[in-house]
Length: 212
Image 1 (cartoon, helix red, strand yellow):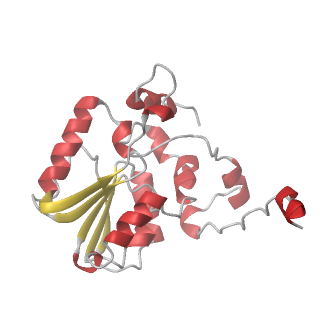
Image 2: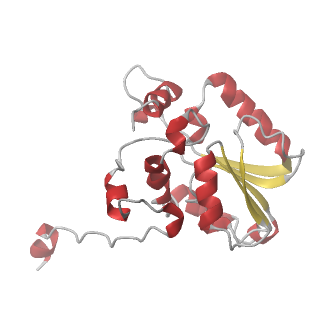
Protein backbone atom coordinates (compact mmCIF):
# COMPACT_ATOMS: atom_id res chain seq x y z
CA UNK A 1 0.00 0.00 0.00
CA UNK A 2 0.94 3.69 0.20
CA UNK A 3 2.58 3.32 3.60
CA UNK A 4 4.76 0.50 2.30
CA UNK A 5 5.84 2.56 -0.70
CA UNK A 6 6.70 5.57 1.49
CA UNK A 7 8.88 3.47 3.78
CA UNK A 8 10.72 1.73 0.97
CA UNK A 9 14.24 3.14 0.39
CA UNK A 10 14.78 4.59 -3.09
CA UNK A 11 16.60 2.52 -5.66
CA UNK A 12 20.19 3.63 -6.30
CA UNK A 13 20.71 5.53 -9.55
CA UNK A 14 22.24 3.54 -12.41
CA UNK A 15 25.98 3.90 -12.83
CA UNK A 16 27.05 6.03 -15.76
CA UNK A 17 30.08 4.96 -17.76
CA UNK A 18 33.12 7.20 -17.84
CA UNK A 19 34.57 7.32 -21.33
CA UNK A 20 38.16 6.67 -22.39
CA UNK A 21 38.77 10.42 -22.39
CA UNK A 22 39.06 10.12 -18.57
CA UNK A 23 40.80 6.80 -17.95
CA UNK A 24 42.25 6.06 -14.53
CA UNK A 25 45.11 3.52 -14.49
CA UNK A 26 43.70 2.02 -11.28
CA UNK A 27 40.22 1.65 -12.75
CA UNK A 28 37.14 3.81 -13.18
CA UNK A 29 35.57 2.91 -9.84
CA UNK A 30 38.78 3.71 -8.02
CA UNK A 31 38.78 7.07 -9.77
CA UNK A 32 35.18 7.64 -8.71
CA UNK A 33 36.07 6.80 -5.12
CA UNK A 34 38.56 9.68 -5.07
CA UNK A 35 35.78 12.17 -5.71
CA UNK A 36 33.96 13.86 -2.85
CA UNK A 37 30.48 15.05 -3.79
CA UNK A 38 30.83 17.92 -1.30
CA UNK A 39 34.12 19.28 -2.64
CA UNK A 40 32.47 22.55 -3.65
CA UNK A 41 35.21 23.14 -6.18
CA UNK A 42 34.78 25.22 -9.30
CA UNK A 43 37.12 25.74 -12.28
CA UNK A 44 35.83 29.19 -13.17
CA UNK A 45 39.07 31.08 -12.79
CA UNK A 46 41.88 28.58 -12.49
CA UNK A 47 43.42 29.00 -9.07
CA UNK A 48 46.38 26.66 -9.25
CA UNK A 49 47.27 23.07 -9.93
CA UNK A 50 44.16 21.69 -8.22
CA UNK A 51 42.13 22.29 -11.40
CA UNK A 52 44.56 20.14 -13.40
CA UNK A 53 44.19 17.01 -11.25
CA UNK A 54 42.31 13.95 -12.47
CA UNK A 55 40.22 13.94 -9.30
CA UNK A 56 38.85 17.40 -9.99
CA UNK A 57 38.32 16.83 -13.71
CA UNK A 58 36.41 13.64 -12.96
CA UNK A 59 34.34 15.46 -10.34
CA UNK A 60 33.06 17.78 -13.06
CA UNK A 61 32.86 15.15 -15.79
CA UNK A 62 30.29 13.27 -13.73
CA UNK A 63 27.88 16.19 -13.99
CA UNK A 64 25.59 15.89 -17.01
CA UNK A 65 22.21 17.40 -16.15
CA UNK A 66 21.14 21.00 -16.49
CA UNK A 67 19.99 22.76 -13.37
CA UNK A 68 16.34 23.77 -13.46
CA UNK A 69 17.02 27.49 -14.13
CA UNK A 70 19.40 26.55 -16.96
CA UNK A 71 16.80 24.26 -18.50
CA UNK A 72 14.18 27.02 -18.21
CA UNK A 73 16.47 29.53 -19.96
CA UNK A 74 17.19 27.17 -22.84
CA UNK A 75 13.49 26.41 -23.18
CA UNK A 76 12.74 30.13 -23.48
CA UNK A 77 15.45 30.49 -26.12
CA UNK A 78 14.58 27.31 -28.00
CA UNK A 79 13.47 29.05 -31.19
CA UNK A 80 16.45 31.43 -31.18
CA UNK A 81 19.23 28.98 -30.36
CA UNK A 82 19.88 27.75 -33.94
CA UNK A 83 21.01 31.25 -34.96
CA UNK A 84 22.98 32.07 -31.80
CA UNK A 85 26.73 32.20 -31.22
CA UNK A 86 27.30 31.02 -27.65
CA UNK A 87 30.22 31.52 -25.27
CA UNK A 88 30.17 29.12 -22.31
CA UNK A 89 32.45 30.45 -19.54
CA UNK A 90 33.83 28.15 -16.87
CA UNK A 91 32.77 25.19 -19.00
CA UNK A 92 34.61 22.69 -16.81
CA UNK A 93 34.46 19.19 -18.28
CA UNK A 94 31.46 19.96 -20.48
CA UNK A 95 28.34 19.57 -18.33
CA UNK A 96 26.47 22.24 -20.32
CA UNK A 97 28.18 21.49 -23.64
CA UNK A 98 26.11 18.43 -24.39
CA UNK A 99 22.94 20.53 -24.12
CA UNK A 100 24.15 23.29 -26.46
CA UNK A 101 26.63 21.89 -28.97
CA UNK A 102 24.83 21.02 -32.16
CA UNK A 103 21.82 23.19 -31.26
CA UNK A 104 23.46 26.58 -31.86
CA UNK A 105 25.21 28.27 -34.78
CA UNK A 106 28.53 28.36 -32.92
CA UNK A 107 29.57 27.10 -29.50
CA UNK A 108 32.80 28.09 -27.72
CA UNK A 109 33.62 26.64 -24.30
CA UNK A 110 36.19 28.51 -22.21
CA UNK A 111 37.94 27.44 -19.03
CA UNK A 112 41.15 28.48 -17.26
CA UNK A 113 42.10 24.83 -16.65
CA UNK A 114 44.09 23.10 -19.38
CA UNK A 115 42.98 19.69 -18.08
CA UNK A 116 39.30 20.65 -18.27
CA UNK A 117 39.69 21.94 -21.82
CA UNK A 118 41.58 18.79 -22.84
CA UNK A 119 38.77 16.65 -21.42
CA UNK A 120 36.18 18.66 -23.35
CA UNK A 121 38.10 18.34 -26.60
CA UNK A 122 38.38 14.57 -26.22
CA UNK A 123 34.78 14.26 -25.15
CA UNK A 124 33.23 16.35 -27.93
CA UNK A 125 35.78 16.03 -30.72
CA UNK A 126 33.16 14.79 -33.21
CA UNK A 127 30.68 17.62 -32.80
CA UNK A 128 31.93 19.55 -35.84
CA UNK A 129 33.87 22.75 -36.58
CA UNK A 130 31.19 24.96 -35.00
CA UNK A 131 32.17 23.56 -31.57
CA UNK A 132 35.49 24.61 -30.03
CA UNK A 133 37.20 24.88 -26.64
CA UNK A 134 39.75 27.48 -25.58
CA UNK A 135 41.82 27.84 -22.43
CA UNK A 136 41.37 31.34 -21.05
CA UNK A 137 40.39 33.16 -17.87
CA UNK A 138 36.96 34.76 -17.76
CA UNK A 139 38.47 38.09 -16.77
CA UNK A 140 40.53 38.27 -19.99
CA UNK A 141 38.64 37.41 -23.16
CA UNK A 142 40.88 39.48 -25.42
CA UNK A 143 41.14 36.56 -27.86
CA UNK A 144 37.59 37.42 -28.94
CA UNK A 145 36.57 40.55 -30.86
CA UNK A 146 33.88 42.87 -29.58
CA UNK A 147 30.31 41.83 -30.34
CA UNK A 148 31.25 38.24 -31.20
CA UNK A 149 28.52 36.40 -29.26
CA UNK A 150 24.75 36.43 -28.93
CA UNK A 151 24.69 34.56 -25.62
CA UNK A 152 27.25 34.25 -22.83
CA UNK A 153 26.64 31.61 -20.18
CA UNK A 154 28.47 31.52 -16.85
CA UNK A 155 26.84 28.79 -14.81
CA UNK A 156 27.57 27.01 -11.55
CA UNK A 157 28.04 30.27 -9.60
CA UNK A 158 31.24 31.05 -11.47
CA UNK A 159 31.15 34.77 -10.66
CA UNK A 160 31.36 33.96 -6.96
CA UNK A 161 34.77 32.33 -7.36
CA UNK A 162 36.65 35.53 -8.12
CA UNK A 163 37.25 38.62 -5.99
CA UNK A 164 35.48 41.93 -6.44
CA UNK A 165 37.98 43.51 -8.83
CA UNK A 166 38.14 40.42 -11.02
CA UNK A 167 34.36 40.22 -11.03
CA UNK A 168 34.24 43.72 -12.48
CA UNK A 169 36.74 42.65 -15.13
CA UNK A 170 34.65 39.58 -15.99
CA UNK A 171 31.50 41.68 -16.35
CA UNK A 172 33.30 44.23 -18.52
CA UNK A 173 34.67 41.50 -20.79
CA UNK A 174 31.28 39.83 -21.09
CA UNK A 175 29.72 43.14 -22.07
CA UNK A 176 32.44 43.72 -24.66
CA UNK A 177 32.16 40.34 -26.39
CA UNK A 178 28.35 40.42 -26.48
CA UNK A 179 26.64 41.96 -29.46
CA UNK A 180 24.13 44.77 -28.78
CA UNK A 181 21.06 43.24 -27.13
CA UNK A 182 22.98 40.03 -26.47
CA UNK A 183 22.16 37.94 -23.41
CA UNK A 184 24.28 37.16 -20.35
CA UNK A 185 22.95 34.29 -18.25
CA UNK A 186 24.69 33.46 -14.97
CA UNK A 187 24.07 32.06 -11.52
CA UNK A 188 25.31 33.23 -8.12
CA UNK A 189 25.11 32.11 -4.51
CA UNK A 190 22.67 33.79 -2.17
CA UNK A 191 23.44 34.64 1.47
CA UNK A 192 22.13 31.30 2.71
CA UNK A 193 24.95 29.45 0.95
CA UNK A 194 27.74 31.21 2.87
CA UNK A 195 29.59 29.93 5.87
CA UNK A 196 29.46 32.41 8.75
CA UNK A 197 31.84 35.33 8.24
CA UNK A 198 32.98 34.27 4.77
CA UNK A 199 32.42 35.99 1.43
CA UNK A 200 31.85 33.80 -1.65
CA UNK A 201 35.33 34.40 -3.07
CA UNK A 202 36.92 33.58 0.33
CA UNK A 203 34.94 30.37 0.56
CA UNK A 204 36.07 29.41 -2.94
CA UNK A 205 39.71 30.05 -2.06
CA UNK A 206 39.39 27.69 0.88
CA UNK A 207 38.09 24.95 -1.44
CA UNK A 208 40.73 25.81 -4.03
CA UNK A 209 43.60 25.00 -1.67
CA UNK A 210 42.35 21.62 -0.48
CA UNK A 211 45.05 18.97 -0.79
CA UNK A 212 44.40 16.26 -3.30
